[in-house]
Image (cartoon, rainbow, N blue to C red; front, side):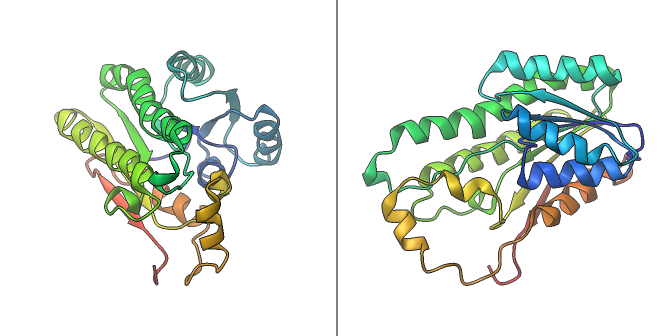
Length: 244
């Protein structure tokens, strides 16, 4: 897909992977709609990215609200006439041991990591099918392939996101709507700051045995998937540090 003048909607766009992907696309001349909960942060990013060729719009959005996600897609259509790409990127990762019963955090992860994806698909898919064109991407994780201690619920949500995208790919295979799961390994983002389980935090004080990826690394993977010719559908990209 040639990105110049295409419209890209990105959730979780106020930092990390979302922010980096927005910058990558706007440099290519795309119209990018930034969506996240932090209005002030979105305004800061817009001010910085306005220097590039593409146009930037922002919409405060909580992906746990079906109505707000539907409003986001309609806002993008109103601003730029269509949505060519939706990147379901908003996510949470408050890792915890299940014995510590962080039930509120489990519920929040399901709401953001699973329901948020479904709301995004539900809001944009009819528009894309009607146009017989579009690309839906979702941030899954290597944790959507293998569960690890402290990640039972997080991995569960990422397995769900990946399988939802697999099912969607099968259902739209006779259309020109494309689908991609982006499955990163460890990335240096704000996700780690959502952990409240003291047992997990104490264990992490020793650091990691490898260097995390940067948001820009994942943005390149997203760009790779979207920029393929119309007849090429990259259904999943797994990206991790080379020694993870």
